[in-house]
Length: 253
Image (cartoon, rainbow, N blue to C red; front, side, top):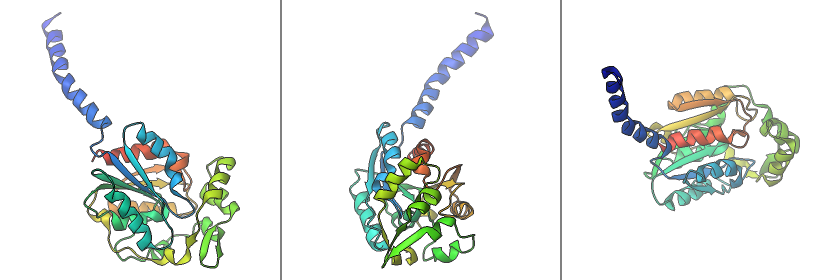
């Protein structure tokens, strides 16, 4: 072995422990707890594919059953779940539940926020007015109300909400969707946790439930680490690997 080869070998050997520590840091999240919150037209099981992947990596996962009655009651359900965690926690929300993440994410236990095709208003902001700055997404026309309670028609659910899922899978999700109280959509957040917490956002580029450009605007305004997924509104189900990887980034903060 010549002198140059020997020096290179010694340098590589010395660097190996450092590389191993970097690799370990990338695969071993600092935070071990995740609380998930679901949006309208869904229930807590919508996170099942992501949960299964995170559990394989030793992450403790809790999916809140959002009552979909009022922002206060939904936020209280999320706060109870956060309080029950054994340590620092990443808070993840889809769709409407971005309101909940924004409001309760100020909890000192929450280390980072992850938004998946989600609402991300500022404190006291009228989200409905904000959304009117963008073309109305097709799914809006498919909401059917029974008195004060709304849900998607089957056609809207399959085509505009879960458009990139196999029809047989989408029909099962349609069957378990939970109705929401109409007044829920007009309520406003008190806090804007994204102003003080590390934030991550997954934009669904084929979204027909929230305008993708509105998602981009909210993600940019937050200064979020942003990824774009060629997916329907249900990227958490159609692209669980991408969503899992984004959450793992948040866990590493």
